Length: 326
Ligand SMILES: C[S@@+](CC[C@H](N)C(=O)[O-])C[C@H]1O[C@@H](n2cnc3c(N)ncnc32)[C@H](O)[C@@H]1O
Image (cartoon, rainbow, N blue to C red; front, side, top):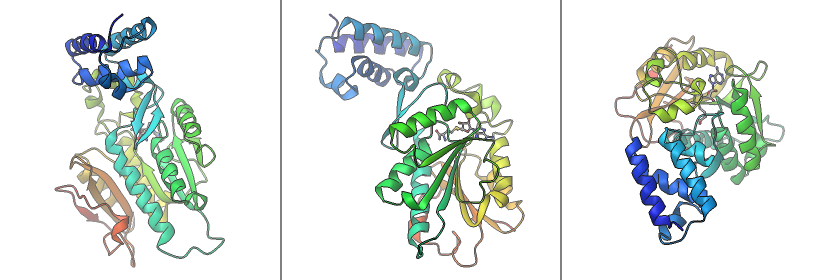
């Protein structure tokens, strides 16, 4: 019977030859999945024997990985924000850089619920996650707000134009026990009749079409609609920005994930909106501009005008700018 060490060594060698840049990690994850034990157990027990069924499942998964299929789809699971999400080809695999959008969303919602008294009868805060994919942003936010006992004051909508993605998102919401608090809707950007929103969250496709074709082969297993943002990557984002004057409540905030080089283009789009707007681009954990915060310029407490620190992330991308338009 093969041991864990033997299978790890042979799997790593095969994946290295096939071009995987994370061959050892991929192999540990796949063997852990095949054994049903997790990666830590695999690393901790190199001499453990592996049964024939687990070995066959592992070998089959390595063969698919050799052809480029993402590990997350093979295991059917991806960790995001410390939570395990079901992952398959119906939706984009959640990326770690999106976690700062969840952080910012939690800060934004918490600040809005605590900075001013909310007498009985105050309408719920309306939050929408546009392009929810497998539901990660809305679901992670819901679990955070549940922990803070804030859910009863929030109405949380999650929208996608892909019925497939929404099917996966609903399964994830059930798994995280928030299916009763997140409402999933199929629509282009947002469904008619739901605006205005106090907080708009969006990680829409933003990769230029030509670059999508050059991504590592793993990305070719993901839905193209989740990645391809048109010639300059901003087709859908630009439509979202143009709709903000209608979709965003007067004191509302939009938080959009963008490509690391799209800050100036997004700032220019915001500057062209009718009225007085500001756009602040914040960096992700790697220091790359990643999160655009957009809101109307307020007389009393706009983001650039002394908004409480707990509302804003500290990390500002080098070279990013606050664009004040209007
Ligand atoms: C980059 S993926 C993000 C998925 C998820 N929010 C995440 O962060 O993992 C973009 C998502 O936007 C959806 N999408 C693309 N165009 C859209 C549109 N016009 N309206 C609504 N959703 C759209 C795609 O189906 C895809 O699920």
